[in-house]
Image (cartoon, rainbow, N blue to C red; front, side, top):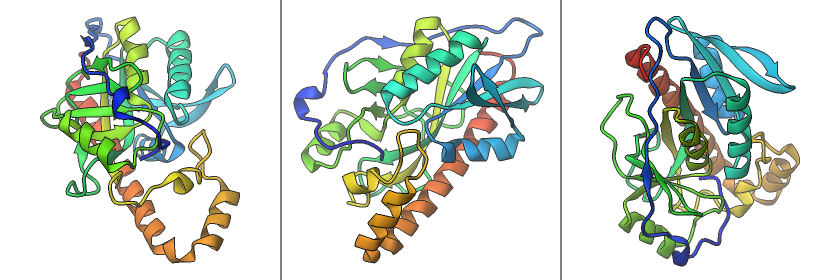
Length: 266
């Protein structure tokens, strides 16, 4: 899980409106799909599996291609709600998109869910406002629980227990922000995130979080300093890396399969 440590129970808003967007494709004009990822490592499997090619929109790097005759565009937003909102708004301002699909990793809130498990939330919650957003159903499984989006690293057992009691099944840093941008424009959106780590097992702390830059790329100097200081954690970090790689591949597979199954309708 990617975030920072100070969310109190008072931040957990109890009630908020639930929203769901709906837009239909024009007959004979298949839906144009936008894949939105927070980090390059989440985009990489999509690029490889769909043979996407790199290009630019107003100086911003994007990837383009097709999926069974439908045009595909894929972007990396960077980590956190602010960057996610900015990148999504920029994309939707410049491109005509019929469906947005969020693809990437998410952190579990308990120790039982296996790494590599696909999470299809019934709702996504903005931790700052309490607003809940309902993803557009694209198949792939039965939606369950809530995904909690916030900009803080949650490691406090009491806070995590409180979230579980509220039906939260996983944590991320971007999905609710992306959903909000889509909802304002009436664009259907979906999310395919896969468990890569657990907020409850101590594998990710503030120091580990800072090994990544805000754009989601590794920070080489921070990584080298961390391993020099903590050589005993190399095996654990290797397990985290394997979990993240499995999660990104699984998320990409699930998103691609769902888009194939959804056909041209939104």
